[in-house]
Structures are given as structure tokens and as C-alpha cells.
Length: 266
Image 1 (spheres, helix red, strand yellow):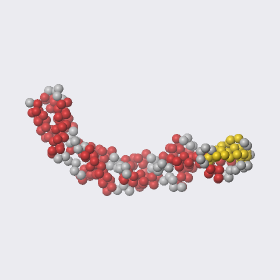
Image 2 (image 1 turned 90 degrees about the vertical axis):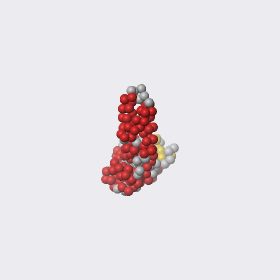
Image 3 (image 1 turned 120 degrees about the horizontal axis):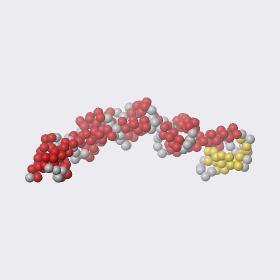
Image 4 (image 1 turned 30 degrees about the vertical axis):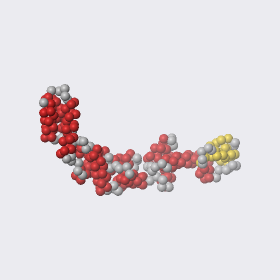
């Protein structure tokens, strides 16, 4: 048996140093101190000392997890990863996870529902990206499916339409066909399905009027025409037309603009 000869506070708040037989033995959290009724003069056997140390390891791990949770909602997987980084053994992690789950600090369903809501209203993302993010965070397929059920098709279309209008402005200097393809790709990158993207393109006006389409192709044709100025006329026309086809312009408009450029050379 060993006797507690001194208990003193440590620099870290809520931590205490325990001396046994006038020698430092270990540190404990305040919760462990209270749980075991540790006080000067108390006798401890080796088995009890090991239990105290084990419970203190749990207390330290729980405190680390709570600090991590204090900044944002986390999943069980994310908390485990943080505890693993701190080299906390699995059995202690298991106990801490159970405790925090029972106390309501860890709840993957709540995390998923909150994440979906955030991606609908604050930092917009489509359901494809949301699902990927949740799975990567360790949320189960079942919970992800339940959470995504709160992301209605009406909400998806409304959000995608709002984004598409911005993308349409961004790509306003592109040919109509290319602009629409870029809008679809941009929506896909944001997490919206191809079907949602197609539906949105039917709902908003992304077609350039004739004047804008002519302005865009003329500007791009002139750049290509200058780029290939060292080519003979036939090759210059061929390469310029190919470049414009790749940008999504119609053959009729391409022929018209290139013909104007050729005439200008004369």
C-alpha cells in the first residue's frame, strides 16, 4: 500500500499532481480526484492506482474530444481520427465515444442533417457533393440517405437555377453551345445531377441573341486569324474554322465570319 502525502494543483487548470510516499506518482483530472475521493492520507494499492490512471486517461481523452467538438459539429469518425492523432489507444477511444454519444455531444444523424441544411442555405452545394462529403466524414449510407431526403427536388432546382444564372453571366463571351456545356459542368462540379442541370437549362434563357453571338465569334475569330497569320490562306482558313468549331459556333456563322476576314485581307 502507498499513502497520498501531497496533492497540488498543476499549471493546467483542473489538473492535480499526486504524491505517494513523498514522491510524485501521477497527475489526475479534477473529475477523477473527486470520483475516487483522493485526499492526503488516503492509502492506495497497486490495483486501485492502475484504475485511477486508466480513468484519468479517459478523462484526458474526453477533454481532448470536447475541445475538438467545441469548434464545430463532428462525426464519430472525425473524433476518432483526432484522438488517434493524439496517440490515444482504441479501448479508451471506445469509452469516450460511448460517453459523448450518451451525453448527446456525438450524433451522426444530427451532424448529417445540419450539414445538408448548411449546404442548402449557407454554402450551396448539390446533393452529389453533399453525399460524398458525408460519406468521407464517416457517416453511414443509411444516415446519409435519410438526411438527403430533406433536400427536396424543388430546393435543388431553385438553387441550381440561381447558380446557373451566375454561370451564364460568367460564360457570356462563349458560344451558346459551349456556354450551356460549361454551365452543365459547373453545376455538376457543385454537386447537381445531369438531369437537374438539363431541367435548369430549360427554365432559364442561356441562348445568346444574334448580335452577341456575332460579337463573340468575331472577337475569337480575329484572335485565331492573327495566330495563324504566317500560314498560307488555305491553311489559315482551315485552322481558324477548326478553332471556331471547337468553341461551339455553327458552321453557317463560322463561314460568314471567316469570309469577312478573308475579304479584309484583300
